Structure formats: C-alpha cells, structure tokens
Length: 338
Image 1 (tube, rainbow, N blue to C red):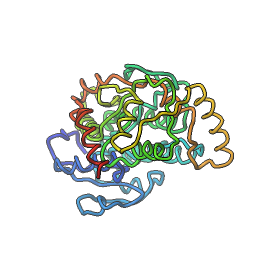
Image 2: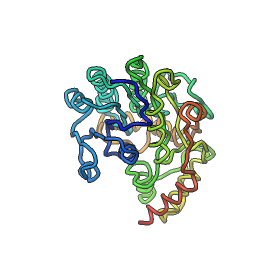
Image 3: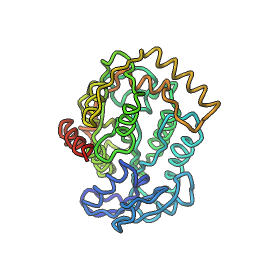
Image 4: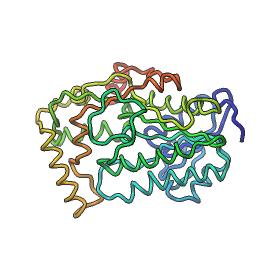
C-alpha cells in the first residue's frame, strides 16, 4: 500500500476496542467523514450491529484473530486496553503488551502502513507530581501500577516499530470524560452514593482532563498527519483540554450535576498511600481479580498535580480542544439529567 494523503481520500481503518467509549467515538468520526471502518472487539454492541461498520469479534491477545482483522485495511487505531488497578498482572500484560505486539506484527505481515496507538500519560508517571511536563519527559525507573507499566512497554514497542514503510505514533489523552462514559464518571458517582469517596490530600492539586470529542479528534489528526516527511511518525503526544482544573473542585462539580453533595471526608496523602500499599498486598493474596478501594497509584492520582503541555500536539497535529470545558460540562449535565 502507498503513502497517500489520508485526509483527502476514503480509507479503511481498523479500530481496536471500537465498541468502547473512545473507540466508538473514533469510529463514528471516521464514518462521518466517509471512511470505511472495521472494529475488533470482544463484545458486540448495538453500534457494532447497525450495519455501518464491519465487526470482527475477538481478543487482541489472539494473533490469528488480529491478523484477520488487519487484512486489507489502510490503517489501525489501537484503543483496546486493560484498565484498572486490580493486583492480577496477567490480564494487563496479555492485552496491553501482547495485544499490542500482535497488532504490530500483524500490520507488518499484512502491509498496513499506518498505526496510531492510544497510550496514556501514565506511561511516564513515576509517582511524582508533574506540572507542565512535555514529551521530553523520560520514562520512569518505576511504575506504581501494572496498568502504567504495561502502557509504557506498549508505547515503547509502538514508537520503536516506526520505519519508512510502517509509520507509527502514540496519543496520550488524560482522563477522558463526557456523555456516554462507562468508567470514570460512573465510578465517581457510585463511590459518592455509597459514601466511600474521600478527598485525598489538601485538595489543591491541578489535573488535566480531555473531553471525549477532543480525544477522538486527536486520533484522526494523528492518523492524517502520519506521512513521510512529517514530524509525527515515531512520536508521542500529550492530549488534554489545555486547561488544568482543580481536581476536587471538578469532582464536586460532577457530583452536583448528579444531584449529590460535595465530598466532605478527607484523607491525608501519606495515610492514603500507606493504606493503598497495604491493600495492594492484601488483595494480591486474597482476591487478585478485585480492585482495592485504594492503591498507591490511586493515592498519587487523587492527591498530586498532573498536567501537561499540549504545545507539541498543537504544532505537529494542529490539535485544538474545540469543545471547551464549559461546553463539555453542559453536555455532561444534560446526559446525567437523562
């Protein structure tokens, strides 16, 4: 296959995890602009059955399924991932590492020339606050969660696979949210309703977030920019709203939209971190497939500042967070009210 300009002609794109929150939004945007879409996912959804997309059912950890899904496509956008903080490491390595390796191998075997990987800022998270960090930040010596470690290993594989005939890049969206979210927002609301949500730290930490439409658009911009001579191949890009928010003010605003009171109970970062370490040990012994209510990784995410520069994405991808925080919040409010 050649290196035609993807932004000006119809192409066929495989979206892994295409029935998920981010993957389905990416697939819809590809369809809206006239591209053909194939989805690889473990479970069907009404979206995957509506006839507008081609659906391949299976797991990215199975190479034969992955190679079948990659056959005849012009590009892959790889969003499928195992998320969470449960102690059992095996599912993370199977999906995030082996699954990514399978896709890279299948793309090379089938001659697929473009590959966009959904990475995460967690790939460079070593458990210390990050304020205004950019893509020159090195990978950490240690990761506080298996998720962070496996996303780092997968990103390294993707960027290392870049070549003249196989162009790759990685997108690092931070805390994706919006209408239709089945992970972040519902978990926050559920914990608040159960009375188990605690403010960790002094409540002054700033964090990046990314509205779902902006996250999806960033992937399409990256896909279109993957071309010989472009600065994009072989690079990773932080993606966010470009406006850090006060973590606990933002959480309380979400709770207010859901008709719930703000978080009142507090826990110091030191106590949360030590409690998380103890729970990690206990859950690993007794219930490794269950997420502990607190871990060291969660403690740092809830108490420390994590926000990043998106200037590189602005420059190389022409990325602009078109849906503002205010507009995104109104869309979320309307969705929650339904």
